[in-house]
Image 1 (cartoon, rainbow, N blue to C red):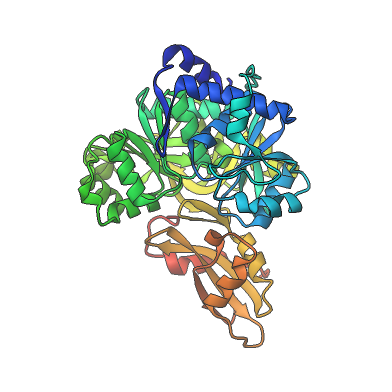
Image 2 (image 1 turned 60 degrees about the vertical axis):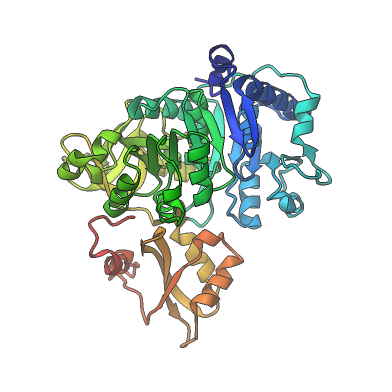
Length: 518
């Protein structure tokens, strides 16, 4: 399996089909593949060797998609950079996996100097914007213009394709290593279950740096779809794209869908062409789903469940189960059934399978499971115990094979589709002189699914406000990780052995909810 295979097929099966649409630019698959092959030649001329990591720091664009495939074509490995990270977090990810190349757009070109000065691994920067090329960088369009098409490196199967960073319980992000086999099998398995149309029109609104965004690019190209791309999620831009480009399918995090439905001009747009609404990264509550179904009755809804370490999808709740039968049977509250090549088990604390209906940890096995965490053998061994990826999610499986996610075993918060590990936030809080102890948890939030909530014990009756906490954390961690609510207590709940009992804090906020994640 090689991720560039759909490009070769496109040249014989759909060369004149529109491949990308972005801010007035349109490229056919013939043009798309040619630009990729020429950019790959440019990367090699600049010194890219097989297996080298290429970081991409950019808003969504057609050039982002070209950079992904040009890296594969040249034999490299992509490192999509979280655009919401601080410079320190970005530098850590660059150096952790020795990214030598960085592709950066207009929005992030001001970060080139601090990143190149702070990173020990970075040595080549390529500018993918439309303005004046910053000093010391190479121009992406010039590389495409000045090079002939390169031969495809044809890396495949277990060859590394991507290092995608996710939050870490130790306070540092982990680089998830995904192979060509991982990503391609996930694209094909998702297609097999979801039954999405070939040569569709796909809207890309979720951030491409996220594994769901990258995955949708790979799926769209695999099916030779027209990929309509907007720079970043914005409700009006989504509505305009669906109407003006005849979008057939898209993926939105439930928080995004909520914002689209709430837009004051929602009713002014013709959305009748939208047939498939995929959602994931966090569960969708039944109230929001009912509202969405009523607002877009022609659209079939589909939920995907997974994680970066699973490339990313392992179960899908298909459109069939989002209707009345799904509500009446309770299946709509599930995350669906596993993909054809994926096995799911529910296990106890000793990794023994438990009976149907019994809660335990969700574990997965199959070709979608990551190769491991970059340079973290102990954490890799812990996650991949006995050949199964341990998700850290608690759930159960019913007798029909539907998987239900009910809680998290790992200390992770999902806010607006972004993963936040509480240890990282707690580490930042404990650098404040006023803070003696702290515990960070996710609590229900109507807009973001969950929000980051800090419970703090202060030193010597010190004063501490939420504004002070937010200002302090903003200097250390990304904005989405910053606590949005604060509670001061005299003590935190501890076990007889002195272990912090976070579940007691969570119970106070989630006691009236059937599901302990949102």
